[in-house]
Image 1 (cartoon, one colour):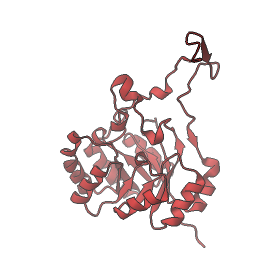
Image 2: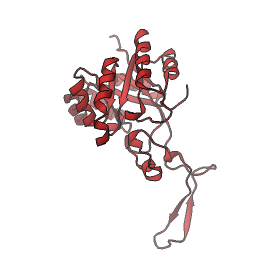
Image 3: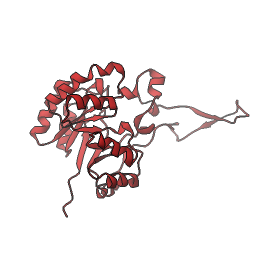
Image 4: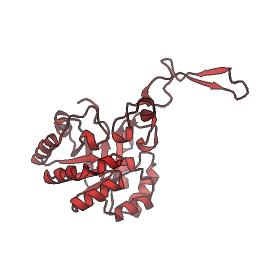
Length: 260
């Protein structure tokens, strides 16, 4: 029995990164523009740049997806239709969403769009995956908190739903990226793409016993200081075979803000 080809997606923060990803074997890339994407900084794409990127990708037989995965506020709803119209006109291969409002707008303007559920939507079980599939979602990017057993059950129960998983890159310490520290500390909203990554800052952390409030005990994680909020980056290279055997449709690399 011939094994199906699993799509490899790589991030691209600009056209050079996109071309590099394709040169090193990516089947597809994902990009976005700051207004509607979860990468506001270190992101050089405009709608014109995406049009150029789509043309390049299609010329070499590759695919390009666009992230529209913010949690939209009322102010975004008036701007979104024009953006979706432009994505439709330049024929992107799919749109990543996390907000039901964004999905509604896309389905109204572009009924044939390939809509992909972002990991930001926290799909962690087969019933939620089935629900999204019934809404017309063709692929779900599963929550990064899932085990291999969880992924296997979702794929088994909903075989017609495409399933995508992250296999390499940064892991948010919050649940699939739903973090509010950046907004709290700096008024820059992570869920609108402007996270300053306070989880990677160095903190002085102390414990105090309830009845001895002035008797502090310092927590030290390593010789360079305490980084207790910063999880290790994801690397599933040794588990790739297991994922593919489950029937995964796509493997994803994180890092649109990374260098070439």
